Image 1: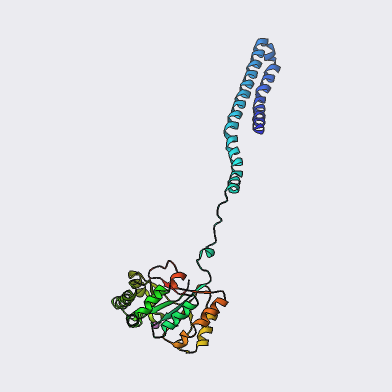
Image 2: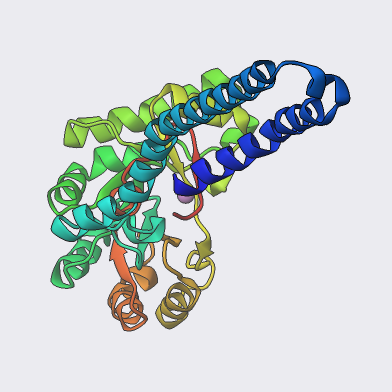
Amino acid sequence: MHRLLTSALTVLATTALPACANAQFLEGTPKAAESSEPNIQSAVSEIQTDIQSRIDSTRAQAQELSSTVAPQDEPQNEAAPAPDTQAGAAPQPVPQPQANSVDCPNCVALTFDDGPSPYTNQLLDTFKAKDARASFMVLADHAYQYPQALQRMQAEGHTIGNHTKTHRQLNQLAYGDIAQEIDAGNAAIRNATGQNPQWLRPPYGATNETIDQVARDKGLSQALWNVDTLDWKIRDSQHVCNSAVQDANPGSIVLMHDIHPTTVNAAECIIDGLRAKGLEPVSLDELLRTPVDGKRYYSR
Ligand code: NI
């Protein structure tokens, strides 16, 4: 404010000088000297009046500026500490990184296909004893054969998925045939549990855009996998356990089959081994809480 007024007065003094010089010039000229004294005094008086009016005008402008510019500056200067004061009085929650918003960052999904089988109850016993969860991708005919196994899965917090009716390779079928396979699988699960599944596991993991579309239309998400234990091929419990535990990472989906006793007998070793690695076996519904219809999930 003070600096503003000073610079305004400096400008005024500079612009006023020619008027003074002009007056002195008039005063110094012979003609002016010959002119009457009152004329010179009158001219000087006019210049003085002009200077005074310019000083008044500049002062008024400076005051106007100080009342408009300064208040704009001051609130900005005062606004800065205000948030700090508010934050000190009532701290806001710190936004959490995306990774920390995952329900269980160290979870994995153990999935068992092609059942239920005569061995499934033993597998459910192991998961119950260990307080762990799994997912069962059932075939329609087996679901009709072992409805109580599905009811137990449902009651004990496991996820039940649709593995179709006849285990055909869906990517070789047209939309209508794919839909029939899926509808039959859903009906078998609904028969035992009263609910449609959320998950489709295409046999052999064979999928394509037509299957994506059918799954989307049926309200199913596709559960694929990123860990294959090859338990159907290598019928050795220790191998199955080693494969599942060593290859699993946070978010993994592990493929196994509960129609093989060697796999069922490996379950305790797998659960213990995963926990020793800091991983927790959960159901697919727990691993992926908001799956998108039609989408393919190989892991979280
Ligand atoms: Ni299968």
